[in-house]
Amino acid sequence: MKRRDLLKTTALIGGLALAPKGLTQGAPQNRPSLGRRYRNLIVYVYDGFSWEDYAIAQAYARRRQGRVLALERLLSRYPNGLINTYSLTSYVTESSAAGNAFSCGVKTVNGGLAIHADGTPLKPFFAAAKEAGKAVGLVTTTTITHATPASFVVSNPDRNAEERIAEQYLEFGAEVYLGGGDQFFNPERRQDKKDLYALFAQRGYGVVRTPEELSRSNASKLLGVFSSSHVPYEIDRRFQGVKVPSLKEMVQAALPRLAASRQGFVLQVEAGRIDHANHLNDAGATLWDVLAADEALELLTAFVDQHPDTLLILVSDHATGVGGLYGAGRSYLESSRGIDLLEAQRASFEHMLRALGNSPEASQVKEAFRAMKGVALTDAEAETVVRAIREKVYWPEGVRHGVQPANTLAWAMVQRDARKPDRTNIGWSSGQHTASPVALLLYGHGLRFVNLGLVDNTHVFRLMGEALGIRYENPAMSEEEALEILKTRAQSTLHPQDAWA
Image (cartoon, rainbow, N blue to C red; front, side, top):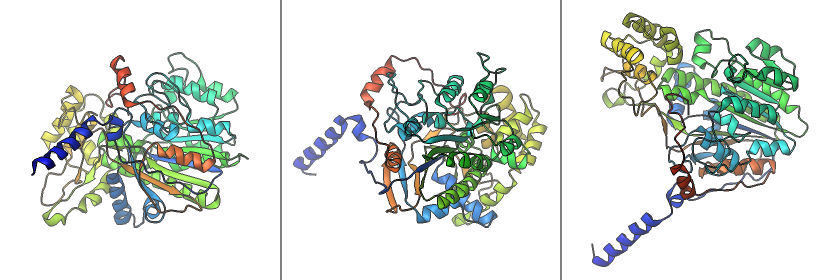
């Protein structure tokens, strides 16, 4: 290389090193527009959903169910693209910062809801929509007070302050709240002993807590809380007889109530337990929650077809775990067998661990895996699970695979035969969120383009605003400002082992 060229290259590298951090994150801004207005808006968040999750569900639906995913049909025909997911100070986001990007249009620090690190509150988009006269609904398979739904309606410095968020929901007054989280509404379980159920009923809400009550209710406003914490996984609802409504059934209850609004509505639906199953590295639980999300998607697209003044935005907030179907056998010819082996899975790790308790015997572990996962563990593998549960000795380790003991349960049932999968050939990068771009899709009448390209997650806010004609901006904070504030802040955010992120 000539000395002159070397100097040019050195100068270029130095320039990149000195560039503001905010300019080195992500791709150049791409801001596609809709080209028309809508009356109603549905935002459907596939939480923790990666393209690997899509590939496995797509293959299972085709190979084992003889059908094509609704999501596959939409991706092949309607505007879609990718979003960058990083938050203000981290390339790996979590659900509150990702939700803030969607609902507020600015990057924030991980951990708070519609708020900057210095305490500056932001206005979530559904709050602006309510001010414009829109009815509001939140439907999720997590606790209803969890980060993704909450980030669209309230501001709070701590996403884990779910008792307070439940009170903020009462003050906010959305027409529909459906999900889990009895512990945040029940006076016997709240720390302050407040009866949030009674307070919601006094405000005119029909309070329902079972699938039967949900189907019977004729109340125009609904608070539905169907589980102590998160709504149990679809795999457990379907195969273990757990009595909770499906995501589709909750959406079915929400839509007519919101559609009755004369000025239109906004609805957020969250397939939230995809994320949780991926944290656990639980391929069967992930698969069935993706399939359940697809059933709800069928219902939502049918509604859009019948109501052409409705826009549906489907988006993932980040990827989690990234459990991918990897090649197996000579020339990878045995790879598809891993999809077939998923059919034997009939319960989540969450359900298994509850059944096993705190001190199981190796024989009980072997029987649980046989009955619920269709896997015959060796004595050594069963003992590995016993030690993880009893003694907190984790495999393959407790850092990258930090959601334990579930990640050890996943490790105990990995493929052992290199020639042909004896167990599902699905491998996990970690038990945590990752930095990869994820899906964005639009469905509605009159959309004028097919390829959204790569956009920032904050652009979802602009698409929502354009759809409903609601235009405002929240104040932005720089990464440098946020990092200075974080230097003085005590670390309070829980590890994913203790609180789902």
